Image (cartoon, rainbow over all chains, first blue to last red; front, side):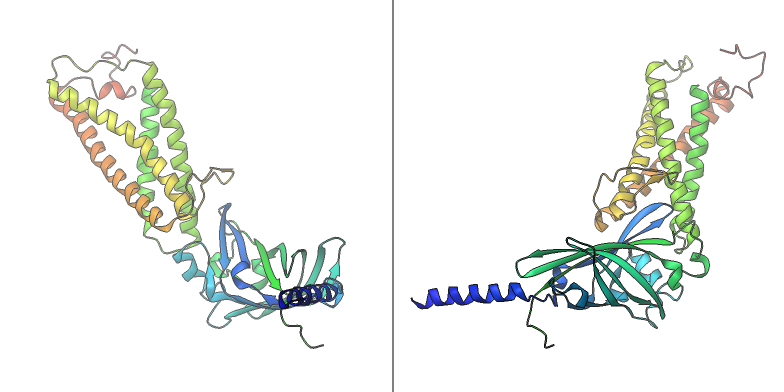
Amino acid sequence: MNWRHSLAFGLLAAALSSAQAIEFNQLQLNKSALSFVSKQMNVPVEGQFKSFRSKLAFDPAKPAAAKAELEIDLASIDAGSKDANDEVASKAWFDTKAFPVAKFVSTSFKSLGGNRYEVAGRMTIKGRTLDLTTPVTMRQEGNSATFEGSLVLKRADYGIGEGMWADFGTVANEVQVKFRLVATAGAATAK
Amino acid sequence: MAIALHWLIAIAIFGSFALGIYMADLPLSPQKLKLYSWHKWAGVTIFLFVVVRLGWRLSHRPPELPAGMPAWQSKAAEATHALLYVLMIAIPLTGWLMSSAKGFQTVWFGVLPLPDLLAKNEDLGKLLAEVHGLLNWGMAALVVAHVGAALKHHLMDRDDVLTRMLPFLRHPAAGDMK
């Protein structure tokens, strides 16, 4: 057996052992996306956050032990136009200077069967922390897993768009948030 | 019918033109979003009326121009009318396209979404905004010529070119109520 064979065997063995206890914990930002759709005068307007970080620990064999944290840099928003980006940084909206980061911390992962999970956690935006739950589907491809889901946030719950913007007739209260987080199984975390 | 469509569309165009100029320089506010939506709804509505009007025009012969008009004036009148029709179609279309390019879909009366014919593209959006504006100023110039010519017919030539478009102002004895 030459060195190529032993390398192949080694990789195979590694793959097999990691299949038994794989933990997806390295966020791939360039493959991930955090987008939202708001409605202005009933016109859907897409936006996204370009910069966010996530601490993930997800073992498909032990979903209940999974953990997720997400930190979103609110200054990285693209709300559809330059005017809108400047506007939503203001005090009436995200007040980005005072509250630069929005944060989600999971409190529980529940398996709904198949690839579906329900994740509960606490969302903090603009200094207000509220409970939220969201469905998540997980798709595993080799060494990486894609977590996708969408949920509706009510902007008024977090004081996003106050004062003259508080009227839902122009900008709807409901904001559809969509996320796609791709994580690879990196170096195992010590537990 | 032709007269009713003429005045309906004229009033709607004046309103949308004024609204367009006013709203463009407003700072971002809920009011601005509302005005933009109203302007777009008006544009779609005008476009539909113009389509009906074009159909009517193509299927009905307009009254003859007064006899004895110099040939260059008939030609100018014809060209002005043709260009006004082109602009009445082109201006709403460029507005629709610029909305799509800027990433703000047009949803007619907040109910009926128009398909986006263009993908979002900031530079293209700016270009189309320029085109939309230029076409509007072009139309404003043509409307000035159109109104000026109508007044000239009425005040200097003393023919019925203007009054036949104003059925309610026409002297009952002078009109044959066709």
